[in-house]
Amino acid sequence: MFHRVLDALLGCWHARYSFPITIKGANRGHAAFLTGTYVVCLDCGKELPYDWEQMKIVRAKKSQLAAVGSFSTKEASSL
Image (tube, rainbow, N blue to C red; front, top):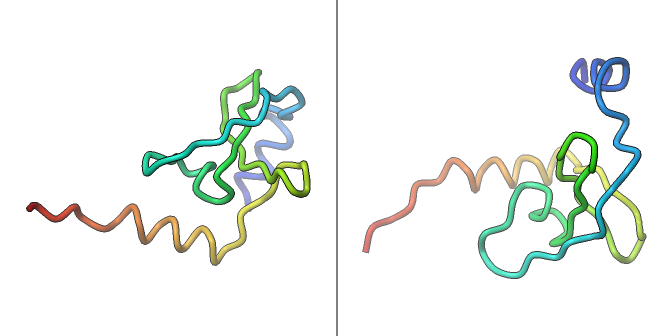
């Protein structure tokens, strides 16, 4: 929460975005993992999840963030 306040006061306002980008396949970043689509802030380069149905940037819920975190901590199995 402190990070959001600090970003609001001193960081980028994310006012200019790229066109929404949809990633198909297994190599999705954090932002694309939530909805499959993301936009990039043209000022700072941050990727933000985008929902085509609502046509807006969406924020991750805590349950979704926990799911993303559990995928990143798993080790790949060797065949």
